[in-house]
Image (cartoon, rainbow, N blue to C red; front, side, top):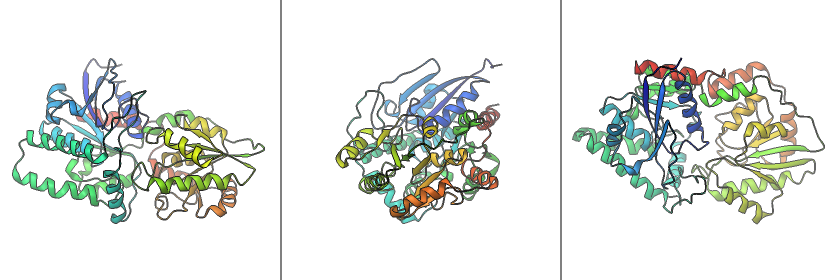
Length: 430
């Protein structure tokens, strides 16, 4: 039975609720479970370079952060019971972690994406590439709206001004200003982690997917009592959809290969030229083998389908292109998945025992520290890709290896992660 209590939640985030990104889907799953117990009014505060047509519904209101002077003004206008944000040390979360603490509003931070630790110099280069890219990483095309012109660094300055206006409104002292400028820019730029995190934006409640995330946050002096390991809500529906499904593919005349891109240049990890070369060379190599049929699946949110259409056309690549299609439905039709870099696709293939091959033909491909090579195949040279595909199709894997890797990647896989998250949120509201 749903309580008549009405709970307003602020959700500062890069993308609107219509997006299919990992963070958006995870938040919607948590809110969905919360709505089974209380009436929830959602206010999504979108931090995006482009302004877009706002489509509200009965329980969801979408606003653009630049329609307000600062975060305090937004809190005072909507009077939320709590604030929910991605725990990464980014301006949207930092603004409302600080403002929420000032206004004594409970805050909830989520850490669900598997973390990757790399050399600091590598991530410094990546972050600089993102700062000086032509478009902001957060920008996505919504419906038929055209993206507005504006470089990433121009947008970053506007975000920074919003953050500083919020801090000014909080009337913080000189020592707090000094501490902020010593801490935030340094951690953001020099963090040795892919997902920067620091106690500066510690929330009232921290929800994380795995024990390893909890350990990392403890090292940053997060309060252990406020950290709850609940698993990854993103995979709750996946659990329900796959509980009784059999993905054994009947071998046809050709081995069907689904090549999934890793959005590496969109995340500032590789240059676009480097990623395009890898995709082009891999497809051409696979097409040398007449027993293979190759299709390309790009990221549904961060990738530009026009870019990939151009890549295919210019290089005359023999490949079918997918973007918005659901991965779970696609892999029913394919024998092997090939990808590179960290991706939820690897997690889903491991869960489903689907043969997956990770390309590590480029130095520091970001997979070696994340995935267990007892579970997935690894290709370190495209000349050996045919043998590597054959090996992963015939690999025998122990159940314990599957269980250990799933726990390491996503925590709990039982369809109840969202419910655990909503229960923890209710505890801090009562």
